[in-house]
Image 1 (cartoon, one colour):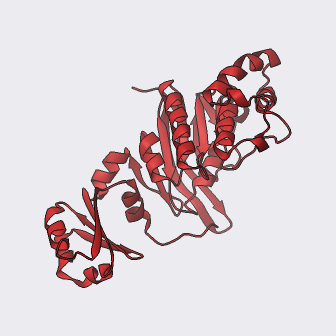
Image 2: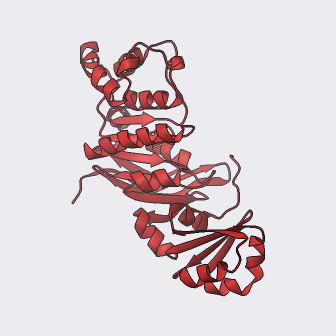
Image 3: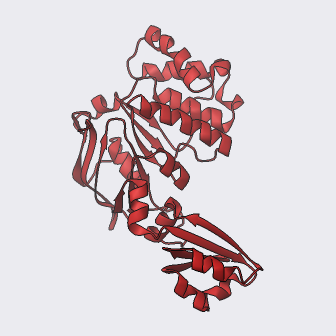
Length: 307
């Protein structure tokens, strides 16, 4: 059985008359990446803040690394690495100095930190930027520096809050590569993300939150198989929306509309594709069901504004 590093049980948090996290429980094992996904206002950030000891739950408990939060908050934080959603690097220090100063917060000796800095910069692919300041770095470089900084204390568990937001595809893929290396080294990760491809690529398991409650939990492919038909056919272009009121809907188990695109969810796409071939003005895409389909089925397609 895998070593259990983190366990949250029955976490609940209210602000005024609003319950923003409602009886949420989950566990993280050694070498595992647990992804937390959900629309805006689902309770992800509040959950992370409770895990970090920054917000005290109204009910529930958190055990981490054999210790209890908030009683042992300082001892737990000494073994955590955190990458927040927003850049918190010191703009006045170089990359190497950012790592040095951050290591001092953990009571580490300068000699110990300086010994680690070259390896951390190499891990972040920033060895050539040791003397550069954050303002001289690209967005992807700054995110990798934030990750390297979170590793300065050699944490057993990393909490990453949307670590690739704002990055271009190349920078995101490099960040994913680094996170995969950490998992292979036995690190554990709690990850929040809005990118479904990121969640499917990195996460051993997923926790889906909506309106503060856990609505699903499991391995990405297991959740997809449990909640969705295996094939998806997207139809868009001139006349696509007319399909919603046509006999063609009987060829699918479920039909959804988003903007100008009609989504057909089916066990067997061939009869539907044959029928759509008679409408050459339509454009179609046939693909397997994915995590984004799962997310939209469980949480809806309507836009959620930030609270």
